[in-house]
Amino acid sequence: MQWYLKVLKNYVGFQGRARRKEYWMFVLFNIIAAFVLGFIGGLINQSFGLILGYVYGLAVLLPSLAVAVRRLHDTGRSGWMLLLSLIPLVGSIIVLVFLCMDSEVSDNRYGSNQKSIAA
Image (cartoon, rainbow, N blue to C red; front, side, top):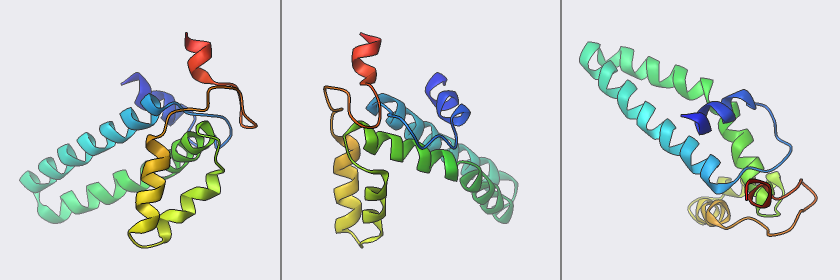
């Protein structure tokens, strides 16, 4: 839960770096939350569940973009590389590979390596 709250507290912080764990824990929590909201909405009313899902998606849109940009910064890439995902199929695969890559070992132009600070 701390990873999710950490991202939400820095919801418009596009500067800096985000470790893999921070990014993927945020993604995991969003997936779980979407399933729970869909289940609750399906029990109450299907259209209510749809509205609930849209509201949640809109609420986490900026934090999701910010943590993805910071994750790309951690691999030494510009946040603009996220726009590659607009290319059908191939672009999303490329961005997914970038998001899965390990951090740059040394400090880069986006900040210091969080792994070396935590260790």
